[in-house]
Image 1: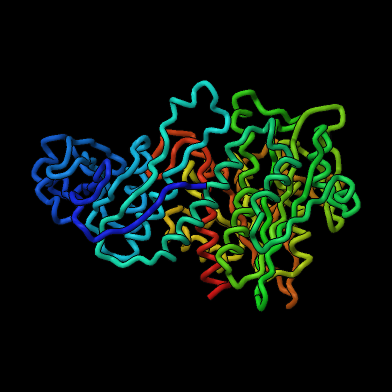
Image 2: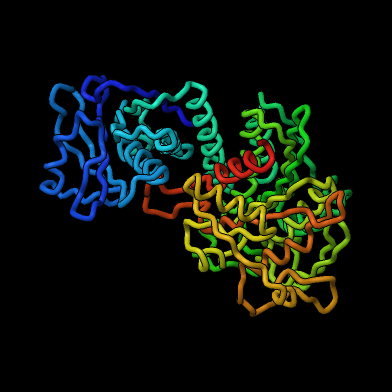
Length: 493
């Protein structure tokens, strides 16, 4: 949970009792340009002399501000002043000023969208994960405790509270994703989800291994059977009175992924405790929606398992029966995410929701295709388009990827209804995984396929470093804000 206190003020920055006053610089065509409260305009003439360029994330500290106890910091915006760059710059300043108690963000921006973005960036940046710090805890500077946004724009307390609530749920995703796989196993995740849901108008139901077998969830059981810590399915339901639309969510929750008998190389295994971040995003999305009181029914199906190697683990060429009866030949045990997700997709489809959205760190191919900051989105064109547009609004890049029909042939099996992939063929790996999931999307009450979107967050879920904008190294909470904005626009309007 973020602990920063955010306020706004129309007063001159020098009159505020803060430790640091932050101004922004822009990379103009003729050199750096100051973007600040008018009372600080005199700083402009010194920018080039002290090496300021205005590039994004640039951060320069100056001596005390005249007439104030505060020092001055200059943060770069990049070439343009937009809501996205304002969010990044405000977050960058708060992140890099960790250890300071209080700051004033004096960017001189009065557009409401810019101010809201600054509040959001500052709130997300005031985060530190210290669960495992004992002897080295002193090395981690405490996040900034309070920030004042200097602006003449009027921002209500309710609007600030909303931004903080969303930032708290981004922090929930980051906390869960950053946890060690040694202590966040399937049942531990279920316990954490139950705890996180306390006080929210939701219900949490946990299926143990006996229930999973009884319900025919062969994908989750198959992947989880190699671990002494058995799999779980967690159903989180939010059903507000009067809701006329229903959004189903499915999250990949592999709490640790060795690759199974298709064992990952040692270097590729590093970071595999983060393979449950899709489940963390979908959990947080339901909880945030419930606490905001969105008039939309939402159900999340979190598919939790450890993919380990043991005498009980599945083998290559084993055939699993998914929920709904589809049989799948396992050609690679490291293509495990799609197998647990298949059960969740069928369960979600059985309730015939108005939309089905799944979130997963599904493929390394997503990183090869889109890098580590952009999420690939596949599925129904209209729904995908709305998610991509919401990503532009929130500053989280999402990109529409195709699902070419010819890729389905890569999932043909000799003996089963389908295979989880074609051995030796790496062409379009992210798209093949999406094609696999598409097979498990059911039909709605109107007899047509349920509108569906698949988000592969494999690259963007964790920032491998260096830190940038409002994000330190570690989990990012990517897609939570984007999906919340998309759901609100499409279903809660």
